[in-house]
Image (cartoon, rainbow, N blue to C red):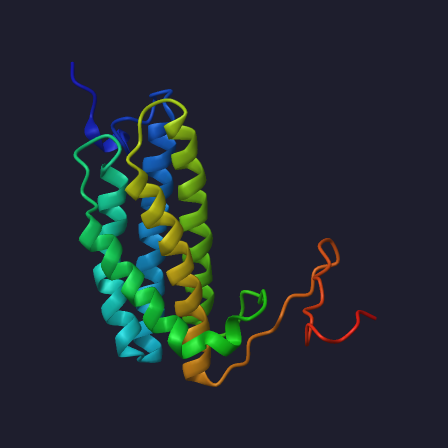
Length: 185
């Protein structure tokens, strides 16, 4: 007798391969992107909402590109790179240091997306130890994490919320030299 499908949340759940963990993690990433989109729409920042509407299905394309056919193209990566450059042009001053993940609801949601993209990248590395993985998937996820970060900072900027720099007690920052002709103190 066939098992009732209502009791199965995912057909590959019992597999031992890391592919399953990757697919579950990228599903979480996509879900977080959906939450971020809802928050961005509430804050009415159209450019970010439009970009997230295009990124949202791409996260599922990344998801299926390990087990199935590669669905991420160089054009997709190029578009995401252009979006990164767009946001960096607007938030260049705010991203000169490591900042705390805070601010508007949308910014916080985008910081969660950033974290989920990094987790997806890490699980993809585990998958790559078991099978061949197209390099473009690593590139896309790494860039996506960075796009989510600059989008978060952009959302705070649009709301007039200042970034809060994080000063690490574990990794002291080296002071930048003001002028090569001055002596070090």
